Image (spheres, rainbow, N blue to C red):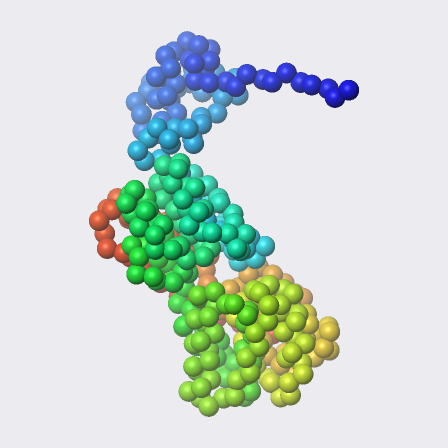
Length: 334
């Protein structure tokens, strides 16, 4: 026989008011930022709320207000260390700015328009997108309902959206200059088979620099932007003679590439070949990798995204804004 347990009655504001000996409106004012309430009343209400285990239902409150403090975060590929750090940064900085983040995590095949549409049901103050570029229709719908939409590292489709971008073209040139500066002469470029907008951009910038300098370039497209695809790329790279400089467009792939080259292919890195990545994920600094890479600052991207969000909330009629974050070379031992 399965044991059953009685359901506990959910505590509401009426229960708190009764325990504290105040009105329900006093309870509401206590938990509303900026509302007028005496210190004595606030103490009574917070004490009663603690004793009863009462929590304000921020979601329900947002449905009754024209503007809430909820901000939707739309993300995919959370197994990628860069994406996980990015969401952590955004969540932390949003809370510091007085917002409450709601994360909608989608699979790589998820429809970003559907995810944003789901957020619009909850009267969110805004939406920040780190996954796929949202289609024009959902961008227009956000504008129609007065919901600011900010994208991070996404393509400009000419829609009314504020954007934060890492200067990936500068990053691609930086990777080329580093390899050329340490004496590499025959280059390889490792990227996913279906690169994202920014990954394709950093790869294209690197390729243009090679072409301008008349340096031979081997392109290896392998799987997705992950560790196993880097391992697979190492097999292809090891079969090519005389490659001495490799730009792997994402650190997550570069970790697999380094392990494949060093352990499976028995190559001396950096003796026989130099490798540079892009992103500067935490694992890049681990002693097992010591990966030289191009850093795009999660903190800078998050700060600028929230700045655009707040600017749009304060002035909905602003023209679409774009802020650029500069990458930085992190020199290690690969």
